[in-house]
Image 1 (spheres, helix red, strand yellow):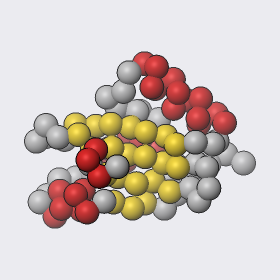
Image 2 (image 1 turned 90 degrees about the horizontal axis):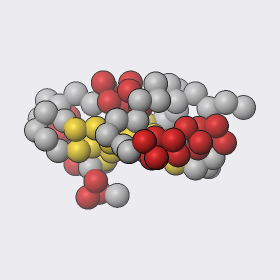
Image 3 (image 1 turned 30 degrees about the horizontal axis):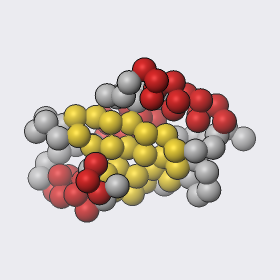
Image 4 (image 1 turned 30 degrees about the vertical axis):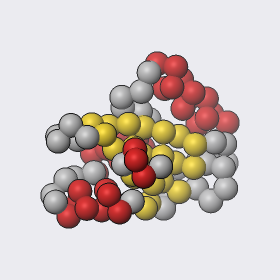
Length: 92
């Protein structure tokens, strides 16, 4: 069964929740992640995400830079309960 990244549950970390409260919009980054645009990863890391997607097992990881210059991570765990989490790097 192919996993649909558009319908999996979403959670945000406290740090990202604070960014949202400050007016940052994370929806463009979620859209990019769900459309397999892995953001600021190396070619090797992007290829690994494509491999994980094909296996439907493991964790997908994307990195995007917001307007303040900070990075946010979007991770989707495909192994057990499929879930996408948006977090700051130091919250991992």
